[in-house]
Image 1: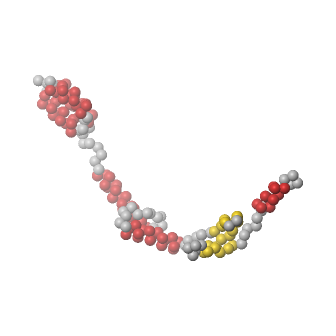
Image 2 (image 1 turned 180 degrees about the vertical axis):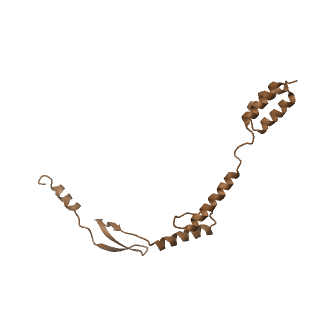
Length: 158
């Protein structure tokens, strides 16, 4: 310690005693009770314990739910402590699953099979069978670049 006087001063600063609780008045009129942890010039670092009652939290959740419903918002903010918001969300999820289940995402006809059938019909030499197989391939959304050579070959069938 004799060689390092600044270290001793820093140790004394680090060992500050906890301050007494104070009441602070904020600009909006709110008062906070807390303890000053540290002070530097004209600024303070406070330790404040803020708690809300369960009733106040429920009131805020209910107010947000009502505001969202009044705004005709379908998907409301959910809270695990608010049953109506959970019920609305479950109802909307079930409706969405029904809606998505009704969407047809797959063509009724396999394009690969339709192309193979058209190729077989064209190679078979029957013009009527080739024409119907090519029409079926077009219905199955087989790309034109695949059908063009088959259509050219079908024109040459006698």
